[in-house]
Image (cartoon, rainbow, N blue to C red; front, side, top):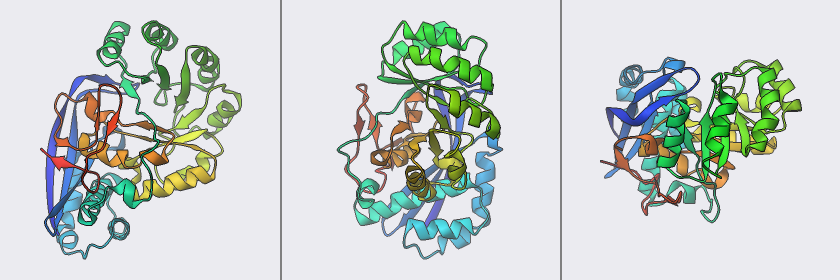
Length: 336
């Protein structure tokens, strides 16, 4: 199996800000795995919050390049088990796991959602994310991309005023993501006011390790609460069952599609709603997320829409918020 690593610097259409950071560019690692005339593509983005850079991921992977290229590839699941034994970070494992899944589907000549036995007859529509900015800029971003569901990033001194102002310009469903910026009191106070403004749920209002606070919130909030920073890997799902209404799985954080599939099953057994989110990936990462759509309640896969220029073709979103799947195997990715 041939391994190729590519670094890209993705240029965003607008400065993207959340409660703890802002950026105009997103560094991304693309892993290419080639076997028997087919090439699979995987992606993992850099993330300073988790101390991950493209360079650090490349160093990890290069250290075991020979073992990777001589591995007797059979299934993505066996490949993932091999990778976890090598002590790689989940971000690096994710890129390799996504590439293996794309390759496997292309070798089989089937998209992953078919291999997994799921149907595209029904699946959720992605939200479109509006990052923190002056209110007039947030309104302008929303008007630039009319969409049925918006995720609104909050964590400012004027959060309620922001949502009220945005509501004057659209009837779309709102989802709120405070990225750990609120207190217990703020969350419980804001929830009924936001519900009146057409908010569907709140995502990660409290700090990731504030489990005592989340237990108070889940019993007093009139809105569902979705875990993000509190749900990183498989072992977090069960704990979230007692403190949240649902979980947001990030492929880069959990280590790819292989553990994500297990997390989805576990969450459903616990009665949790399931969302999969993106990390401003290109169409490479977004196309992998899209294969999970029939298994999800919510999805945040707008990453490629936030870019000035994409680096791949695959699953795409139309201006009417429709998801279009390509007629090729795996995740359906072709690198430009």
